[in-house]
View 1 (cartoon, helix red, strand yellow):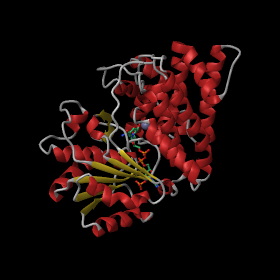
View 2 (cartoon, protein in one colour):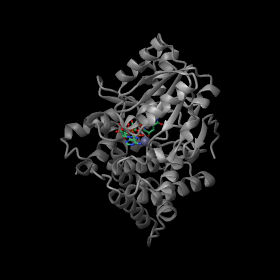
View 3 (tube, helix red, strand yellow):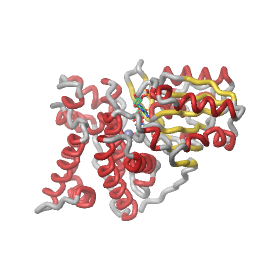
Amino acid sequence: MNSFTYHIPTEIVFGKDSESQCASLICKYGGSRVLLVYGGGSAARSGLLDRLTGQMEAAGLACETLGGVHPNPYLDFAREGVKKALDFGADFILAAGGGSVIDTCKAIAVGAASPDTDIWKFWTREETVTKTLPVGVVLTISASGSEMSDSGVLTNLEKGEKKGLNTPFFRPVFSVLNPELTYTLPSYQVACGVVDIMMHTMDRYFNPDTANQLTDEIAEALLRTVIHNGAIAVKNSHDYNAMSELMWCGSLSHNGLTGLGGQKDFSTHQLGHELSARFDVAHGASLSAVWGSWARFVYKTDVNRFARFAANVWGLRGSSEESAAIAGIHATEEYFSSIGMPTNFSTLGIGIQEDEVLRALALGCTYQKTRKVGVFKVLDEPELYEIYKAANN
Ligand code: NZQ
Ligand code: ZN
C-alpha cells in the first residue's frame, strides 16, 4: 500500500424523509442565510424545493433560491451564483440536485469566500483555493459522488473546456441521502448514474499498484453491488432497496475509499469530459462510449489485472489470462448495452466523427500537450487519438 491521508468530514444522513433534517443541519454548521441552488426543474416539479424553502422559513433561516443549473454545469452560471451569494450575504450554500448542481454550489462557495478572484483561475491552477463557505447537499440522483468528493467539474463554454478541480475545501459539510428522492429519475439518467459509479471505481481499480488487497476487494464488492442493483433500478426506479444501494455505492465510489493506497488513473473520465465539452452529452454516457476502446487499448499492460476483474466482478474465467481479460471487457460492454448505455460514438448519438475532430479531442485531453493522461498506461496524444478512433463507429 502506498501512504495516504484519508479525511472525509461530510456528515451523511441516509434514509426516508432525511431531507426534513436540512434546516437543523444548516444551523449545526453555522448557516443563517442560505442560497438554495437547483437545476432545470426536477426539484421544483417533485415538490422538494417547496418543502426545503418551507423548512427554512419555519426554522427562521433567510433563504434565496437560484434555479437553472444546466447538466455539465457552466462556469458563467456559477459566476452569476457567486454574485448572487455576495449580494444576498449568503453564509451557507445548499444544493438540491445532482453532480451539476453540487459542483455549481462548490464553485459558488469558493467564489463567494474569495470575491476578488475569478473562479476559473482556481480551475486553471493560477490560484489555489484557501477557503470556502460551507456547502450542504440534498441529493436527487446517484451518480457523481460529488456529495462526498473533493472534486468539482465546470464547463467553460467560451473556451470549449470541461475541467475538474480537486481540493479538500470541496467536501460538503453534510449530505442528505434519501433514495426516494431519486424515484422521479428517467431510466436513462439512472443508467448514466450506474455507469458513472462503476467508472469512479474502475478508474481507480485499474492502476499500477496492485498490492492493495482490502481496497481491491472493496472495489470489487462495490462493482458487483452496482451491477446487480443497477439492472433492477433501470427497470423500476421505485425499488427502494435498489435505489438505496445505488445511492450509497455512488457516495463511496468517489470519496476515495475504493482507491486508497493506489494511484488514480481517470483516463476514461478525461476521454469522456472532452466528449461532454464538445457535444454536451450526459457524463455517464460519455464514459461507457469510450471505456471498451480504452480497455482494449491498455489491457496488455497488465493482463492479470483485467483477468482478476473478469473473475471477481463478472465471475468469468477463460482458458488463459488473456481470454479472461477479453471476456471481462466484453461482459462490461454487454452490461452497458443491456441498461441502454452507449459503447461507441454512434450509440452515444454523436455519429461518426471526422479525423480532425478526433485529433482535437485527443489534444484537449492533454490540455494542449501540457500533460499526459492516466497511470495504468500513461497515454499521450497519439494514443488518446487511437482510443477515440476505436470508439468512432
Ligand atoms: O436539472 P434537473 O431538472 O434537476 O434535471 C436533472 C438533469 O437533467 C436530472 N435529475 C436529477 N435528479 C432528478 C432528475 N430528474 C428527475 N428526478 C430527479 N430526482 O438529471 C439530469 C442530470 O443531472 P446532473 O446533476 O447533471 O447529473 P449527475 O449527478 O450525473 O452530474 C453530472 C455532472 O457531475 C460531474 C460530471 O462531469 C457532470 O458535469 N461529475 C462531478 C464529480 C464530482 N464533483 O466529484 C465527479 C464525476 O465523475 C463527474 O465528473
Ligand atoms: Zn464521473
